[in-house]
Image (tube, rainbow, N blue to C red):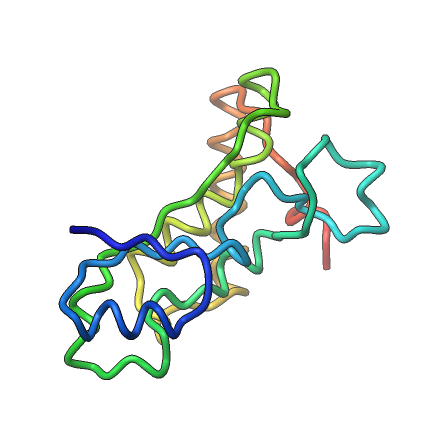
Length: 147
């Protein structure tokens, strides 16, 4: 049995202590139908359901709750992103909503929290940008325009 969590950590800790395998999917970090820019910039953004989930926020996700005792970490199997598509009418819009947040989530899932570095990731993300361009993908460019 798998437990998917999109709410608070208390239920995750309880589920892990009861031996349930868990896929983390917190609405605060991995709902990719949210805007990628703050509210004051929503008018310049492709339509989204609401909220704000930047690439940096996705990258900051720790899928292991700090309060979870180490012996239960094995029950956290990973994370999943969500893209509710009722307002997304084209594949290009879906690409825009997912990229580059999907790249950030990939590193979050495959790397331990202590081995992640946002500044280093942003440098490497510019290489991914070249790949997105070479493949003709439609992606959000906000993370490349900041600083």
